Image 1 (tube, rainbow over the protein chains, first blue to last red):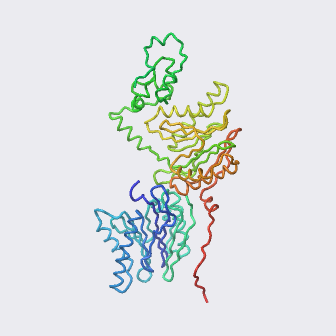
Image 2 (image 1 turned 30 degrees about the vertical axis):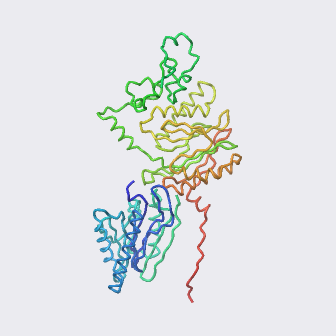
Length: 204
Length: 309
């Protein structure tokens, strides 16, 4: 198995009507052995910007710490939060700095930009941005996730319906993957609130 | 080390061979089926002295494995390289959990039902407990095709034994048949880690047989990538004097814990019991539901709650 499949992960971000959802699985494993079933893969950068990191867990944690540091510096200098598009460019630049010795991570960035327009994007491990208007996925179950999202996605879903769609897509995909699953963690972000929910999934 | 059995043919030819060839090979640790037959031809079995790589190649030693079904060897320039590539291609990682143990009331056999190809789950409903005949069970770990084929082959051989000898084959005999066949294919890339469980005249029997040619008699076994987790639960909860229900619950629990920790095990935990009348399937529980049955979700106590005034 490759280094990207060492810990196992599954991430989705999906766009709705003036809102977005970002969801991950909760397993941390060492190849086939499960070590933890409450691993945090999605981090809040600020109230309207969330970052999910799939791939090698140690690189995900280190990368997150570096990005939080950069964002805090930005906040001190600019006296405001970073826009999602700007943050995506920052992540891309930091990943490309390590072009010849990369972080083994695939980030998924989801945020609300100007006029509460949802923004999602993903990148490969060396910073190639992929902007999408509907959904992005990452992780060991990514092929299953693409299929499930493609089938279940509808444009302009409201927050509740978006939550249902994302949860079903995530759970049905990780049920076909040995290395991810063991529950789900979903954040649904609207201009007024953030709802965090834990999903009951198959624990095998 | 001089082989005391190596005498000139003349001295042995007239005397009836009281000593079966196994007496001769006692000095040499042997597993090979050919020693069974060599006493007829007065040919001494030296195959266990050579490296198994030579015998498995089948070059000019066809007589040694005459009884095992022969497969055609591909004609390529680099047979070693081809063989390595073929073995690597079909190499399954024994991603599974199976267990079996003997207790007062017979043998309890349990297994999960997940088939995985690398990281992808190809099926959650594989039958890993193979019913060889109404009183013999085999478990599947390793290559599914290998296990299914050779267990069915074993079932055929057991039936032939019954017809030829007018009595059922013992668990010892059945496991030996399978072990000898697998040994003759040693090094060719079969992947089989199976347990043969049954009830015969001597009572309950349990053997572990694998594709490296190993065969072990025992009272508690677990095979597969999830076996360390299953052993932990099985060993700590085991007692010879359990009732059938207690033993079934122990087996189910052990499989459940293995599916929780091991990524390559999951699906349905099946439990079979082998008693004096033969085997009976006791239960097949979905492991996803078993988790919430053993560990129901308790809503977290809310420490600080904002309430609308």
